[in-house]
Amino acid sequence: MNQAVVTSVVERILDDPLAALADGGIGFVGPDVPVEVLLASGRAFGHLPWTAGSPTRWADRWLESSFPFWTRSILEQWHAGAFDGLSSVVFSRAADASQRLYYYVTELQRRDLLNGPEPVIFDVAHVRRELSVKHTAAAILKLCSALGVAPAELNGAIGQANALRRTLAGIEANRSSDGPWHERVGRAVLWSNPVQWLDTSLIPTSTASWPRVLLAGSVPPDDRIHRAVEAAGASVVAEAHMHGSGRLGPEIVIDAERPALALARQLQLASMGPRAMIDHGEWIVERARAARAAAVIIWLTREDAALAWHVPSQSGALAAAGIGRLVLPAAHWQFNDQSPDRLVEFLTDDVDATN
Image (cartoon, rainbow, N blue to C red; front, side, top):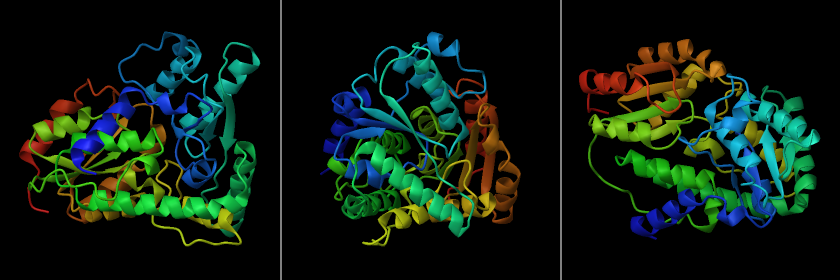
C-alpha cells in the first residue's frame, strides 16, 4: 500500500470517523484502553472523535471550565445523537478528563437528559507493584465480560496488536518530514481499527533533512501545530502525549494461560497517560533521543493541569541532556493565542538542524 492509498483511507476516516461504528460499534475515551479487548470483540471500534471548531453550547451548560475542549466536543456530539448507533463506550480512569466525563455522561443519562450508548468504565492501576498488575488484570476481565469477549480470545488479539505495533514502529522509524500527514495518520489510527487498513508496506513520506522536533504535552486538536512547525522550517517527527503512536508500547509476549495478566503488565509499563507512575524527565529524554530530535516542544493547554506538574523535571532533564526545549503553558486548545509566534521564534532562532 503506497502513501496515496493510505492518504485516501485516512481522509475518509477523518471525514466520517463514525461511519464504521454506526451499527453496534464500540467507542472509547481516554488512554490505556486495551486495544486487544477491542480487537477480540470482533466489532468496529475507535476513540470518540472531536472537532476543533464546532460550538459546544449544550455541553458548556454542564461541564466546568476545567474540562478540556475535546471532552466538550464529545459531549456535544453525544447529545446531538452522533453516537446513538454505538453499543457502548469505554471510558478510561487513566486520565482525569475521561474519568470525569464518564460520571457526567452517566448522571445525565440517569436524569433522562442524554440518550445514546451504554458508558463503561475501565480501571487501570499505575503504581508499580504486583497488586496493581492483578487489579488491572481483573479490570481487563471485567471489560471482556462487558463487551462479550471470551478471555481465551485475547491471545489471538495480542498477535494482531503485536503486528500493529511493528507497523507503527516502522512508520515512526522512517519519519523525517511531513509532520501534518503523519498527524492525520495518527488520528485516523486512533479513531478506527487500524488493523483493517494500516499496511506494513507504508512508505516514508520523505527523506528530506529537516530539524527534527518532538511534540509533547497535551493532545493537539489536529495538524495545525504540525503545520506551524513546518512553516518555520522544521518538522514534528514524533509525538509524546497520551494518544501518540507509541501508546501501545513494545510487543507483548503471549501468555496462553494468563493473557489478561500479560496485558495488565503492558498497560502499566507502556502508559503515556498523565497518571503514569514514571520518571517523566527520563521518559521525555528517552523519547527525544529515540526520535533523534533537535528540540522538544512541550505544548500544554490550560485545562491539562496534571501535565504541568511534570514540566520542571522534563525541562531540567532536557537541559541536562543538551536538548533544546520550548514550553508553551496554559495554551488555547485551538492554538489561536501567542503560541504560534513563540514557536516560530524558537524554531527560527534556537534550533539547529543537527540531530
